[in-house]
Amino acid sequence: MREVCDLVVVGAGPGGLAAACRAAEAGLDVLVLDAQPEPGGQVWRGEARQGSNRLARRWLTRFSASGARFRPGARVIAAPEPGVLLVEEGPSSFAVRYGRAVLATGARERFLPFPGWTLPGVLGVSGLQVLVKDGLPIRGKRVVLAGTGPLLLAAAATIHSHGGEVLYIAEQASAASHWGFALQLWRQPAKLLQGALMSAKLVSVPTSTDAWVTAAEGERRLEAVRLSVRGREEHLHCDYLGAAYGLVPNLEVARLLSCETSAGAVVVDDRLETRVPKVHAVGELLGIGGVDQALVTGELAGLVAAEQPVPLELERSWHRVRTFAAQLARHDAPRAELLRLATPDTLLCRCEDVPMSALEGCQNLREARLYARLGMGACQGRTCGTAAQTLFGWTGEDVRPPCLPARIGSLRIPSDVSSTPTRES
Amino acid sequence: MREPAPKKASVVTLRINGREVTVPVGTSVAAALAMTDSFVSRADLSGRPRGPLCGMGVCFECRATIDGVPEVLMCLTPCREDQTVVTDA
Ligand SMILES: Cc1cc2nc3c(=O)[nH]c(=O)nc-3n(C[C@H](O)[C@H](O)[C@H](O)COP(=O)(O)OP(=O)(O)OC[C@H]3O[C@@H](n4cnc5c(N)ncnc54)[C@H](O)[C@@H]3O)c2cc1C
Ligand code: FES
Image (cartoon, rainbow over all chains, first blue to last red; front, side, top):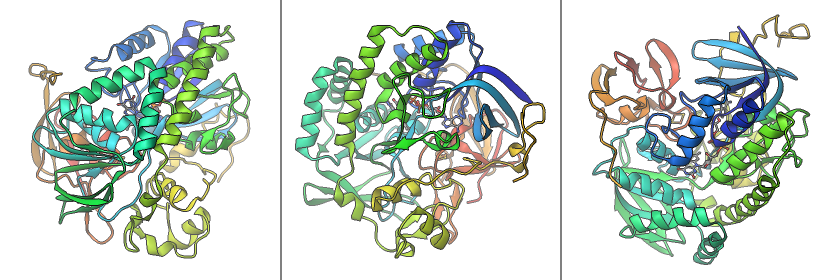
């Protein structure tokens, strides 16, 4: 099976949706692919069903009226030649031939290993939030959250509003950095308001800066956590722990397409075009900046793809959101203590059960993969590779297809799509 | 803010490891797993339990056999009527 389109958009979060709307409204034939069952990406997950967020509602309605086609449950797994993507959709697969591409694959959480982090009941901060939004029963459950930045409060607010009992919010940033960042938010009216509303709801929850989780304890699942709070130890019994330290961009598809990356983000010009012609990148791929950055850059890339003029106001907004992204990166950078929590027998690679001690002597990700099987399992190093880069300062490796586990058959290019003879690999 | 009231009669019933679970429409299978006795999706190489971690299709901790198809991610799969979910935990 195959699809042909003027513009393919990978990812249906705010970035991808804004790009798709702008381009489709200007008359392009737009195809949007997303691994999730509904549009909305991470921040608007579930909004297509429930719709309590007005901004989400507005964009989702605009998207369904835009004429763009959407294929849910469609995972981009390979890019065998310029202008072609291979996509797996449930038990079947298809190829897409496109004129231009907008990559909007968003971000994932940065996990750092600590003793007990593999126990059931230990999740990411936003990971736990997402599961609660997706129906995980949290009413009356005791929850500890440890992480950094605005997403920590967003998760706490969601858990609180679903009846969960948030026992503690541990913010790793130092007090000075945290309040400095909060003050900067004065320049970001929408975000400040959001932050204030969230804090108002959570005033009764103990919160501390300079605080992080040092260990999770339990037999068959999480029973308690140990926290370091301004140099003193706290021990709390709880049902769930959300622990993760900020976000990192999902660079796999961009790397498959050979887009240049620098400092963990995709390099683009002022038309949001990557170093690969006709391939644009938007949203979190440009460096973590949240929903505002995703919308602004998505709109920009959609207009550029459709060869439409870019309103000056949109250009200005882009510069504003970039300033916010830079401040967020400084605030969320994990502190040194977090890099020393794992003991020699703490697992770093959860898929292949590789403990920290197995990495002794390894100098880079390649050696860690060859000698210790780090990142050789199902998630292909998405979790441990990111952790290893943070722990040891290693740089990312090239991505080899498939960028997600795929069936062999999905990697064949249908003969009516390929412009060159199919190579066997 | 109050929790949105569950929509009338919009529930589905599925089986997770042989156990019937009834959930509101829109619940993911990973979220429904927490309604069984254990929030365990698989065992690691030495038999220790694991559960969902990322909730968004990144960590692959939540893979299960769903309606006969192996290695499906529970966190990206909505619950459906009569679905059969088997974890290897
Ligand atoms: C788990 C999580 C929860 C978050 N919750 C909030 C929140 O509550 N509030 C907030 O302000 N911000 C939240 N964020 C921050 C979020 O990154 C931004 O607010 C915003 O969603 C970024 O938009 P985006 O369009 O760049 O990417 P995203 O919204 O992340 O969308 C990217 C989309 O690309 C899809 N995708 C990725 N790779 C592939 C592939 N290979 N094939 C097909 N599809 C693919 C994903 O399924 C996803 O739907 C959250 C982030 C995460 C990771
Ligand atoms: S919980 Fe991580 S992939 Fe499903």
